[in-house]
Image (tube, rainbow over all chains, first blue to last red; front, side, top):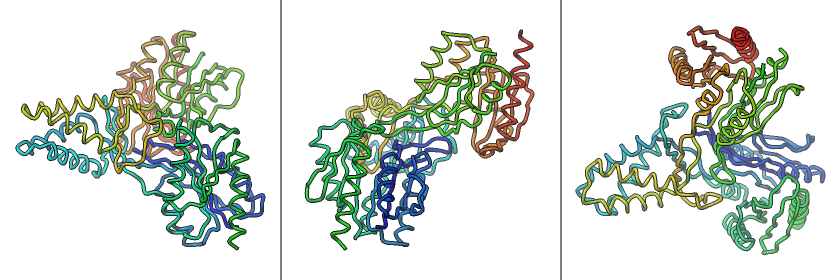
Length: 257
Length: 257
């Protein structure tokens, strides 16, 4: 099988010395890759600088990325080269990228000015529209400083939503066996499974692995592999998760041949 | 000599899965520590998980921290235990910590409401005051979600200024030989030296090492050691910086004995 595995956590620069980073050791992705390599499959592994790596292997090739935009570009390139039999998308992708930062004082000044000019017509709707326009103006303005100044008591950071990588994967690789991941924090199991099922349906995944940060540790790692027929396979360790994903993906792949 | 060296970059959590991280390999701090250990001094080394470490040594003890608040607490504990002959504060400390995150829609709704209630008295000053109050309300409100939802096109992240660690060091260790660091990005040399001299004077440093990210690489690392008498010693590599700092600190220490 030709596999693509993404793992680790992307970072989005705020300025030249700071980033917003999604935490992910890459430990689970590494184990999944090791498992498939051991079973004689070929793995293209897209990961980040800080993340753990699979064991070196002749059928393993590694691509390093940093931001969500890097990831989108790298995947598009890979998808132009080949069809993957399966894509296992464990990477913790930044939902947001930094637009700009503005000091509280500059923000208040600019917004107060914009609101004062529309003072004659101020219905709540007008006020909301004026605020929205100001936020758009500020958000889409290029950041001036290469290192944000620390001379303010409060800084407002504008973040805009990144495109959903998993949706892009499914669009560009319609035939692949797609495994998505959903990580929530401290939610009831029923909610976790519901949210994961929504992810599965929305992105036409074959499987989604659902887990709660509260139960994620270096070796022990509790979670549930959701199948698209609604079956749920629980797992208690990273090793068990890697084996469960491997067995299930291989089974779907065999049934498709 | 009893030395305290801080190195690496602090991180400030935004929620349970994301942080704002200050980039710093810790490579320079490591070399400075190695240099002082080699010269028979004793080093307490405060650093972060991701940063490079000095060579293991019987006179080296390492303390790990993550956030600026952790750092402040760790230093206060250390300062209660002993007086350090010299403190070399290379750590890239986050200037800001995350207060809260709010979706653009929630922000507009709340602000428009607050502005609408004061509509009768709307001079520009009133508007500015109403905006300021709303920002304070939002900023100081505890974050509800443990993982920020991605269901918004724009997210506003409120950041508040951290206390200046270098000022705290000087206050709690008035006798120590204090070396500060100033990193700017793409500025003329004169500006870099001016800003570094301001840092030196404000925090009563004995030395400040001034550098520009544009000239910072793994081995080559251009910068200037400012002495409090205004002397400037240039250096071109991390090794040369470590040696320059060691020689100068040792000289001041000998002259004080």
